[in-house]
Amino acid sequence: MDLRTGKSLETLGVAKDPDVLAFDPGRGDLYVAGESGQVTMFRLGVNAVSKLAESFVGPNSHVVAVDPTTHEIYFPLMDFGGKTILRIMSPL
Image (cartoon, rainbow, N blue to C red; front, side, top):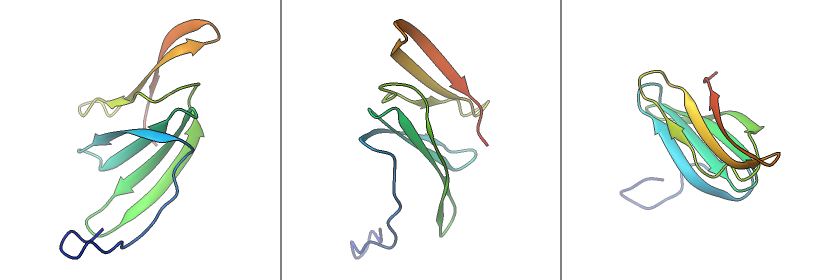
C-alpha cells in the first residue's frame, strides 16, 4: 500500500483465517498465521514482497513468535493430539 495515496500496490494471498503476524527484522521475513493451522511466509524487500511458503503447522496455530537472533519461529499449539506442544521451526 502506498501510504501517501492509500492505493493498493499488490495483493498476495494468505492461508485461511489469518489473525496473527510475526516479523523477523534481521531477515525481512513476515509470518501470517491463522486459526486454520496454516502459516504463510513472505520476504519483505525494499520495493517488493515475495511469498516464499505456505504450510500447515498445527491446529489453531494462531500464535506465532520469532527470535530475531536465531531466526527460529515458535508456534505454541494448545491441542495437538490431546497435548500442548511448542513447535519450533527454522526458516527456509
